[in-house]
Image: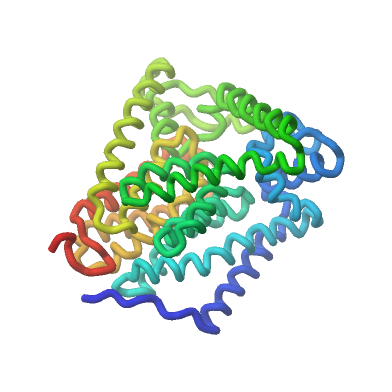
Length: 411
């Protein structure tokens, strides 16, 4: 069965997008102080630009460990928001994320049209919604970077320069977008990787046009030292990380939560191995998983599957992953909608994806903080969402089908 492209956005689609933007803006603007990450950006920008305060280190406006943790470039990009009242910023920030999501979805489904558009996008929305809501509430910049990377991947063939600039901008704010460059090379787009690397370097030092070279490099050095110190003090215990390393440390070592604001997390370890040994074992597994993902991406016949593998393995091998960061799974969640509507996909894969979506939606709704803490320390999001989603994507991609063409690769 030939896949049908998504309908061209009309008045109804734009109306739904604007309603979604308005709802997100109102919902996040209702309680602006809940956007704790955004509060840090806002307070640091106002302190640095208007009161000659520090960019890095403790700040009187918010308590440690809430520190500004990004290069100087992002604070300059955020500066226009710092001109507004704090009560208005969370709504505008959330509305921007939702607005950018509309054209991104249209581009994605135009390039990778599913067999049935409405069921595919409905399933993807259901699976992503719990994490997207958390991400919007936190006010973090992560989802904006995910959108920039997805735009770059969708435009890399038609507009390679724009794609490179978007990747460079995202990597100049957070380092993780650079990890996609080897995967781009395997997909035959190594020129974009080179251009994106150059754009990252130039954008990282771009604040020197305003601050001067000496001040800019001094701030970059402060940022690097601060990140080293934070990771050394709280790297494994900041929160119950939903990554492979976090799950391994909680099951294989005795975690100490006594120095954290929330000390009520339970110990779930089966054994009490030295944490250094567990970290070394995790590092070995991470290297093997990266190599395995590169092999899988090289063998993929379709970019939708290839980049889904990248995003899944990115969250799996990152040292620390908070629950809202699971919104990073935007691309593989959209691909999961294609799998759900593909008549060639086995019923077993579809049942697994249905179970993943049901658990992702229902478990956060269970009342009781004790249950939610237990779900986090057990690694629910990693074991019940990320791991099965990755397995389905990898096994589906290994069949070397191209969803857009409806035929096996080489067939």
